[in-house]
Structure formats: C-alpha cells, structure tokens
Image (tube, rainbow, N blue to C red; front, side, top):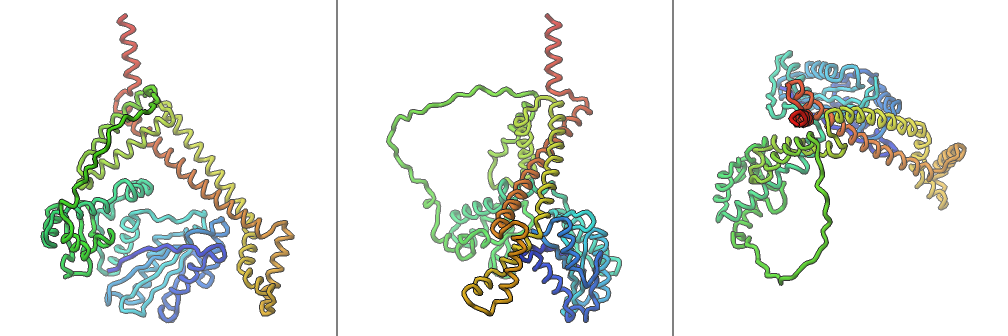
Length: 485
C-alpha cells in the first residue's frame, strides 16, 4: 500500500527566490538516503542541471516569483516493497502524472523502515509557460488513483478513497467563499457546545446532550488520544474542541459546566426613557424589473426562506444554500448589466469574452515590461545584499574592500543604464501593484463571464424545452388584448 500527499514550495524573496526549491532538490538526492545515489532519476531535464533548468524556464516565461515548485511524497507500508520496486513505481507515476510538461527530479529514500519516494517538479511548464495549479479534489481524482493502480500492477495493497474526497467540487472560488464565510462549521459547533454546557450539571451529562444533538464523540476520557474531538452530522471528519478556542478545551468545558447555568444567560432588561426621534427619510421610486429579473428575484426570494431555519440544522441544507448564493449572483448580475431579454444576456456574454481578451492582453503587456527590467532588478537585488558590507566599508572597515568593489561595479552599471537603486525599487513596487491589480481584474471578469454563461445555458435549455420567456408571454398577451379591441 502507498499513500501520497502533495506540498508546494514557496519563494524566498527577491534576492534568491528559488532557495527553498534548491534546498528541497538537494535534500531528496542525499547519497546516504538514496542508496549512494542509485535511486535518483529525472524527467524532462538533466539530473545534474535540474535546478538551473527549472530556473531558466521561469525566467523564460517571466514567472520567477511566488510558488517555485511542488513536492510529492509517496510512502509505502513497512516491509511491503523493496527500494528497486519503489523506484520503478515512483518513476512511472512521475511520467504519467506530469507527462511532457514539467521538469522533475525524483528519488527513493531507503534509509528508514518505511521506504518512501519524493518527486519535486517545476511550477512552470517548459512547453507553454503554464503554471501548475492544484485544485481541490485533485488528490482523490488523480494523484491517489494513479498510485493505487501502479500498486496493483506490482501486487501491492491499495487504500480506499472516500466518495466525499473524490467528488468533484464546483469551482475553487465558490468553494473558498463557502468555506471561509458563508457556511462556517466552527460557529455552529461552538453554539451547540455552549447550549450543551448550560444544560448540563456534569461532564457526563454534557456528553449525553451532545450525543442527543447528533454529534459523534471521540476521546471523551482520553482513552484513544489526548484531545476531545466531536463530529456533527453532515461533517466528514472529527474536529478537536481545543481548535475552536481556549473556552472549548476539555478542562475549560469542565470548569464552565460547574460555573455556568441558564440563569447566567438571562438578558438584563434596561428601561429606557421614552423620547421622540425625528429623522428624514429619502423616498425612492420602486425599481422596475424586466421579466428575466423578476423570475430570478422570485426564485431567490423562495430560496431565501432557508435563512429562517434553525442554525444548527444548516448542514442539512448545504446544497440549497449554495443554490441560493448562485441565484443571488445571477440576479445581481442581471441588474448590474441591465439585462431584460435573452438577447441582452447573449450580448453581455460576448462583451465579457471581449473584456477577458482585453485583460489578457494587458496582463501580457505588464509581464513583458517587467521581464525587460529584470536584469536591472537583479543588479539592484545584488546591491541590496551587499549594502551592509558597503556601509561597514564606509565606516572604515577595510575587511570589506572586496565587497565594496563589487558594490561600486554594480552601481556603475546601473548609472550607465540611467537608473538608481531607489528608482528601481519604485519600478519594482509599481509592477507588483500592477500585477496584483490585473489579477484581481482578471478574476472579476472571469466570474462575470462564468455567471453570464450559466444564465445563458439555463435560458437556452428552457427554449429547447419549449418554455417561452416571460417577455414572449407579455408580447403575446399584448397582441391578444389588441385583437380583442
């Protein structure tokens, strides 16, 4: 049996962005861990020049910052496989998963009881400059299934992948919003724990109340581990109570059971003096909505009734909540772009496609400008690294004469190009802010395009099913009235 996991390797600043990548490559090829270098291989690059080739690929496409590479680790069960077989499995995995797009170095470590393999690959494709992107669910859909199949080929055991891990998520941004703000498990669990605390006289009764709420409980008496963990219905994993905050550790919960009760939660009624408050209210005319806007607003209103349901039961309506969020996005999109007919939505979708192309051209222009300035930025970075030595030399420390010479030579090169170190720092900050701005713009345009495509697909499906649009119904009604006159 082999289990895999993937980690990313970040950059290390402007001076030496690939430092962590270089360290990781050096670590996995240590001779003492790889059978004297016997279990080391490469893909789409030369083994001895792997870091330089990865760095050159990044420079070629102007993508030298942010994530530098990715680190895959595949661990085998103790005693089930030897190093030679593990090396074959790791090599085949790298070829199948990475194909002919990314430079990679892989190795097998046989210096521990659990033989395991490492694969480190570049974050930028040497073929088209596309950056690798790990999406939620890729482990269950691609990485572990390949590992399982290769294990089966060699007669090794495999691991099961749960359906909730393998299920494809919608898109990353929607999932991220759902996780971080609009549906938060922690808030629900804390409220239920608070309710159970004030209803319980003992720790045992507290556990009983949680069980009645539908919670699974683990390590209640530290028989299986150190920390109390609970799992509400609808949640796939147990969560340690201590991760919810200092008031939710087992020790603190026991203290709260002894100190808190229902009376401590009664609200204090404050009698306020009656007074007349005058205010001016600006009246707005009722907004007129088109047929499409009315239809989406009605669906949004009906789905919005979910908000009135009990908070602790929200996990039962996850799909409905997501649907409500989509409907809200669709409705606001229709209002924002003044969409009244199906023709309008088609026109808006075409405009979004044009804006996406325009944004892509602007992004390409900014990256090309920054790439042209890169040699000067490198000189400025070297000068910054030597600045402390230069300051020491200026204070009279002759020990740094060599560094002073290097600093002076670099400064002369910048002066010859017509720039100073301060100006280059301003340019670098300018490009950083411009890239951040264009990326945000790109995300916004992509989201608008996605919503337009979703609405258009729904309208098209309705037309194919023979369902007339609200506008068509209104037009037919007007014609009928005119004929009756």
